[in-house]
Amino acid sequence: MTDDTLAFPLAVELLGCLCAEMPDTVGGDVCWCGLLPGQLVPMDYCQCEGTNCGQAWVRIVSVYPSQQFPRQSIDYRSCADPLAVELNAGVFRCFPGLDENLHPPTVDQQLEAVRVQMSDQAAIRRAIQCCFGTDKKRPAILGRYTPLGPAGDCGGGYWAVTVQAL
Image (cartoon, rainbow, N blue to C red; front, side):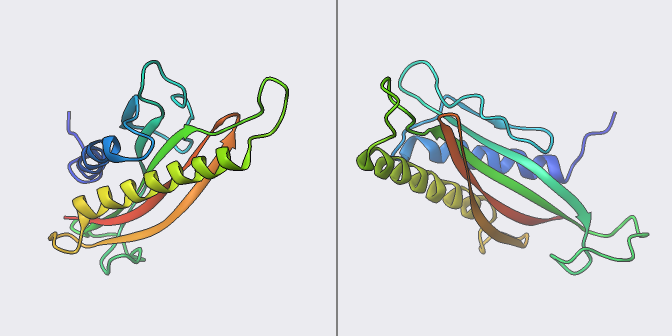
């Protein structure tokens, strides 16, 4: 049995950096921080027991041969070609929804939700820079932050990063 020695370790490394950043966010630490398989990211942990709320996650988006990082190689017949790994790192939290009288969230509730979301966005960026910043030996390109949701009373967003796997 042979484990992947390129994409999986990069995802695990980024996850460690992300989980370490979460306690210092405006929203506080999350109750779940882990790797997710597949294409879709479920919003399973927006409401948790205790003081921690939300989920932080990393997923592998794609892996491709890249002789001239970050471009995908057209001629991929060589087994020795370096690979590029695209990762997403994100956070989901509770978003304000309708109250018991079916009134929408107040301006102040929405303001606070954006404040928490942007604090999480900054924490994800710091985690990526900690793991793959310019002082590191492997090239990395920070993509864009993409907001997600709300879906029910849950939402957040993720940053994309592409890293050369050496």
